Structures are given as structure tokens and as C-alpha cells.
Image (cartoon, rainbow, N blue to C red; front, top):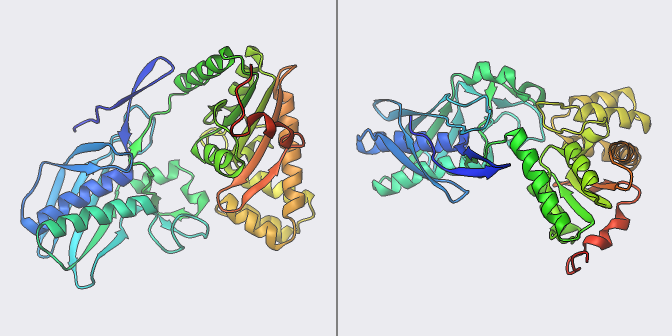
Length: 384
């Protein structure tokens, strides 16, 4: 198996990148389409990922028959502890009368059973970006070989049936297998020790400039919302990933005066339960927290049950809006978030938070959050 030899440095360590199940599905599709349309069994295929990284993926299995061909590639998660590392991802490409490319999910690929996920109920759990990559791989090959008919692509991950039991998929409403995921096509490894060391270094560098205020975001969603919606400068920002607690600890030790946390509801709602490491492998109490605070806001047993059965936090927000419970529930949650942040922070460090969702925008903020906005407004100079 050919390994991706691309690396990043984090916390003084050199970590190897991998590629997603979506990239595997696209690579297997390209190999199978080539075998079907030209009769050539290729040893490897090139894939251009959305991260603008070109990778070469080995083809490990192949078979064909009248009007179809099937190839498999092996997932390489790099140095990331991914449960799908090493699994075979198959693509069976067939000729079809309908134009364009039809994408199906076979054995080991989950099926969506609840609303609110990337794909509609009843569809295979193959997310939008992987679908685009698969379709492009099939249709580019068709164009190169002068074939103007349609193609059907079925993605199968036989090991996914068993692997799904080790994921949160069943709880989210994805049954029968795993999801085909990835927005960049590349897996960036998440070594806890290295990430925390990297956060510590970022904070030290920022503090060395004389800054006493820090804007903290868990990831790209938070950065985009802070910059694009709240119009905050990212000059004094640090990405904490899932390690909010450690970030607060380090900021306190370094002598920061204020911290403004801008995070997606999927992360910050866990803080309302005192969870300071928000990785799903550590804790996934999102709907439980939302259900408890909805009950405090007066939700009926029926509504609480709906919240508990919701697949996503955005779906919960929809329920709360419909029941007239949104404002009270969010106020209760953000108040509790503020209490836990204050409890975690050291003397002299004031921590406030803003919670949002991509679908609904601003959901709530702790009592003193807005008062920190002026310290991070775009165009404002760094602390002297």
C-alpha cells in the first residue's frame, strides 16, 4: 500500500497526513471507470483533493463483467487514530441509460434515517463533497474516452457494517454502516499531546506581543463566524480544537486578562455540562444538555422526547423555535456555560462565550461577551 508522504508539524512533532473515505471512494471510482471504459487495469490513480493536494492511490482489487467494473483502494489515515484506517473502499461502476452519474451506497455504507444530516432521509450517507469527487472522477474518465452515456457508481465498504458499531452513526440516525466523509479530502492527524503543545505555543507567542485579550475558536466554523458575522479581528485569535479546558488553563498561567470564545453549538453546548474536552470520543452529551434545558424552560415530555431523538443540534433548534422555547432554552444554556467557564478560569482571567450555528446564526452569549467585542473589532490595533 502506497502511503501519503505529506506531513505537518504540531507541538514539535512531525505527523503524517492521510486521506479521507471520500478520497478513497473517488480513487476507486476512477480506477473502475477506467477498467470499464478502456479495459485497462491501472495499478494506481491520481486524485486531486479539495485541499489542492494531489495524491497517488494504489488499486488493490479489481474485477469486471459485461457493463460493469469494480475496484478497491485502501484507506490511509496517516497518523490520525481513525477507526477506518486500512479498510478497503470499493466502487462498482456500471453503464446506465440515464445521463450523468448516479451515486449509490452498497454494503457497509450507512443510510440516513433522520432529517438534519448532510443527505436526505433514505439516501446513502455519502456526503456532498465526496459525491462531487466521485461524480467528477467518473465523468472525467468518460469524457476522456469519448463516452457520452451515463454511469452508475455504487460505493461499498464491507468492513463498515462492523465499524459502525464503534461510531456515533447509529445514534445520529445513520444505520447499516459508516459515512463517506471529508470536506478537504485530506485527514490531518490529531495527536492530543501535540495539539495542546501547539495551542500553548500560540498563546505564548501572542502573549509575548503584549496582548492581554485572546479570541479563542475551536476551528474553521468559529473563525468564519467571528470574522464574517461578528466582524471580529483574528489578529489575536487562537484555535483550541477540542481542548477548551487546557486553553483556559494555559491562558490563565500566561497572564491573559480576557478570553472570548466563539464556538459552534455542537461544541459549546457540551460546556454547559462541564465538559471541557469537546471531542465526541470523550463526551457527546449534546441532545441531553439541550433536552434538560428545554425541560427547565417548560418543554413538555413530548418535546423533550423529540429533542432527545433529534439527529443534529440544528434540528433541536428548529424544534425549540416551533415550540416557542428557543430564547428561554438558549438563555439557560449560555448562563450555565458562563458558570462553568468562570469555575475553570484562574483568578484574573475573565472568560466569555458566543454560541452559534451555521444554519441559525447567533444562538446566545454569556452575560459579558458583548462587552469584549470592542477589544477584538476589525481594524483595532494590537494591545500595547
